[in-house]
Length: 461
Image (cartoon, rainbow, N blue to C red; front, side, top):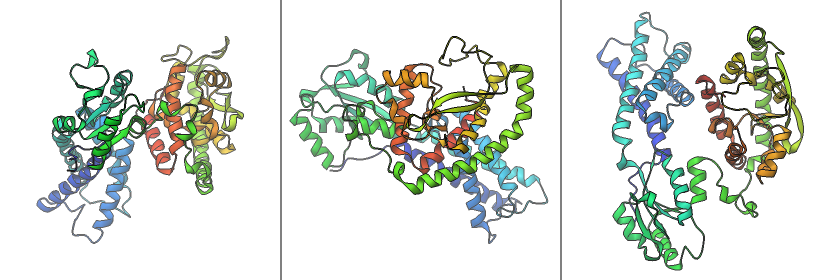
């Protein structure tokens, strides 16, 4: 008998939020139009399909930018209200100022307020229902771990960070005192089908390929359960799909058997499109730079008291060196004793420099590097030669990130805070390698949107 899938995956939750936000919004507008004197969004109009399409597009785009579909935000009432408010504000502003493809502005401007409030409260009702009903233990994915003791605790940290998973038990060789709340079964005595039935397991994660641990008896049970429809994944696949970073166990001497570069790395059409986008955005970025320079110059004159710009040697594609251009954010002679990692609340960063970093405005001059072809809009952040030399000694696979152009922003940049040590660089490397392995236009667009969110919420370092 096939196993029942009663949980909602992370992707299903996000789809639920996107679709139901739209459904509740349109239902609210329909009721407003039907029972009140509200004719701005008239459902009997011949243009209603176009109006709905444009409204949905704005809601989804700004919802993505303002983290309305981030599951951590969606499970928090305060953050949810904040994200809905900002999303509705920007969506309606754009909607009102595109009357060619949206309804003509009404004579009674109060109707615009009703329109905005209806969207806000309709989406809020949907999110309250989500938090109360869907974000509940009965809709979590119940996971059974099959792992050696040394792997269990590490794996638990990875899995419980995600809001759609619940660990119900583990099969291992030795029970852990720190996990007394979880059901333990000795691997030599495990009846997996009985455990699955008793615990309501939806998915099994297998964390070992050790033939002494995964006995023929366990393997036979897994095959039978897989045949009946149980989802069984290796820890490597789970980590990549759930955390969007490379699993470190793939990075061994035979890494080429497990780690393959995205086909887009050799796709000429993708590369040409990326270069065109780099050039287009570079011109826009340089125009912004020209407009910003007077303001940054004044702030720099009074609060930085030194040169406006500075250049620094970085390592690019295939290990080639180039000089990156940035607005200066540190005091003069900040590294008179040699290269140092930037730190949280770094005393070398000036008060004005901190503002530039928080807003990422210090990065704007790098559009010149992008236009020159030394960098791309998206890719691993370029590092200094001194640190690259150190990191290549400490992290065996660090050099792989130089297979693509460094970027103005990147996957590691939006998924992990600023690196202050070799250990931080190690963690960021896993995200960079994931990007190199999976990169495509959809992932590139997601990085751009997350970067915009980072800037708008002042999460720069």
